[in-house]
Length: 225
Image 1: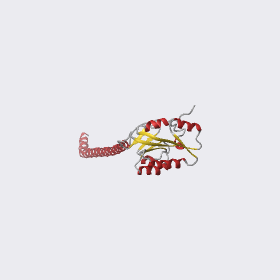
Image 2: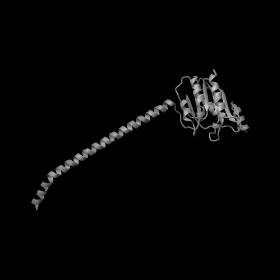
Image 3: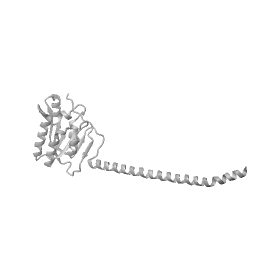
């Protein structure tokens, strides 16, 4: 029986607003050595399920090195993906084919499943030619550079959903709260200083009154004697 590739929940999706979402024609390129690892426990069916929210997967390729097992290759084929096995550098092969897809008129979106910043030049070329970029990755080691250039970022093993606009709103809210907090601290400080001044003035007044009344009290006590 084949070992099926598993994936954790794909719930954290950072996106830029796009009214065409759902109509993407997607080429999915998967960096096998980088992503099909035991610690990520990836199920390619889940990857397909998530990407179908954006559009149709026209091309689905999994890039592997010569050490990939027959069971892994067979599992990839059975899940409807094309295995691309190379004896050379997997990253180079995948980046070259990703760049070639820029000129494929049947594709308007290229999805890279990787954590590797080596694909940044290929992504940049695709963007320059009007292609959308989706990156699918996981921590640790998920390159911020490829996350920032992408139109959509899908993180594996995350617990919540929000897009880039909401992320910016959260940052603004946090900044506002910090500013309000700073203002509150300043107001509280001013109140404390005012109360301290009032208390000081009161003490001074009491001391002044005491300095006036004390001699009188002393004289009364002297007469009593």
